[in-house]
Amino acid sequence: MKEEKKVSVPVIRRLPRYLRHLKEAAANGIRRISSKEIGRKLGATDSQVRQDLNNFGGFGQQGYGYDTETLSENIGHILCTDRNFTAILVGAGSLGTALAKHMGFERYGVTLLALFDNNPEVIGSKISRFTVRPVSEITDFCRKNNPDIAVLTLPGDAVDRSVEILESMRIKGFWNFTGRELNIPGVAIENVHLEDSLMMLTYAVGNPLAHKKETK
Image: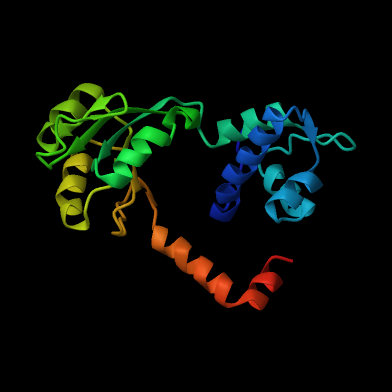
């Protein structure tokens, strides 16, 4: 399967939702599924689902639908979850600890290699299978292990210096939870703002009619 045209970001952002639902369906013993069933679960039309998947070749058969496991594998391939990327996490506070313990990076094709922090009370402590390393060791660690991704869960005032170091180590992507908006040419960045999601929820709660209209 080849991606022959540039696919819009909104389409790509819907693929992880499809993948989550397909994996859930497969785990429940559902071997095939229709675009209507996928759309109904995710609040989309069957036409939208088909259009999204047709960007990559379709995968379904008329009158049969989609094989859940095969479609899961194909979407995972599109999202590069089969590429065995490696990552480090910088900032072993509450959020970093939660991600290291509960995220399950390997399920998404990413192996977490190490955790770093600059807090003397945290350095040397055990989080999951990791012993937290001092930030001063990041450069040597990256030179030896060449991680692809850096997960940033450190305070905003420590971001600039850490990003400067990591960029010099040729990190290919940042998963950024710092609250600071990163934009580095040539580097993949996913800025995660939890407060944005919360405000979207407060909007929906405070404007129920608008919410109902949008989800029809």
